[in-house]
Image (tube, rainbow, N blue to C red; front, side, top):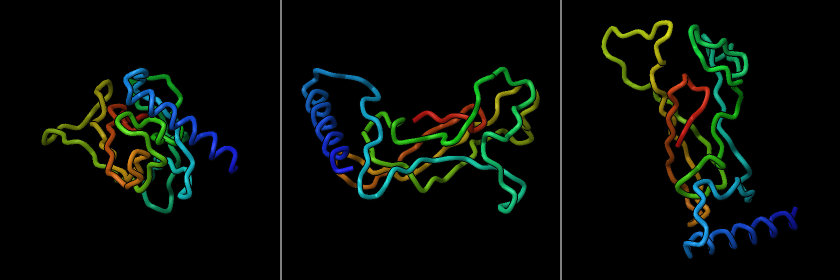
Length: 144
């Protein structure tokens, strides 16, 4: 494990130097990096009560949906962070987007957006930050 940590730190350092020098500009340029707080990710469960929850993989696909991609947990990891490389994402808070009064999505209509707020630990300054992502497909995927 120590060898893995040293190797990943060296790789991160080299990529960060190249990125800051403007020699390498890749939007998602680093995978999650292991630190002493562990690797965390965010998954979604749904159910009629907190005692009968089911993971995303068991949700029925929305009627009229043309999205045939398989859905699975986790729905968001630190590898998806685009503005700052991070060691983890954790402590999520899900907020349903606004809908017009009396507007109930029906078959063929897009589901209301879901906003995901979470804690992330930045590799640049090793501090906790608040991150945000949005889903426009009912929670099957999130984009920062």
